[in-house]
Length: 161
Image 1 (cartoon, rainbow, N blue to C red):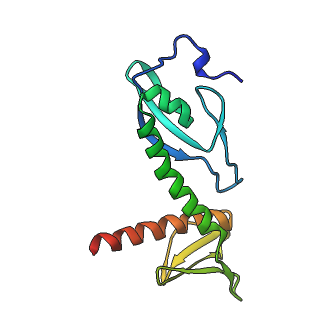
Image 2 (cartoon, rainbow, N blue to C red; image 1 turned 45 degrees about the vertical axis):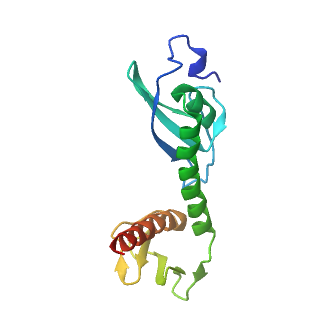
């Protein structure tokens, strides 16, 4: 499948990186997607914008380096997203234990937390005695949400000193 680089109308410079996204999908575990510029498979998509191009494009590290003209910045953006992805992957891998009530429980940063089968279907999550109001279809999706909640909580704690 050809990418945008095959089109003569596609600008080859002066792009800006807006964010880098990790494409791991909580539902199906997909770990790669095609770069829109060169069609190479990648897990980390650099979302680029250009003043002369109407839509954002999602590209691999190599294309981001080339199109933005800043390989060092592209590597740094991806390294930050990669570190977060690796932390999330480690979080999902454990250590989780199943309680007699069917909750998947863990502890981190001195906090007890877990994901549990909700009464009305799906899965919920909690940190200590605080229960998140949303529900997710699978335990892994609830673990992803719990990971985000835990990171936000620890960032808030760190900001307070």
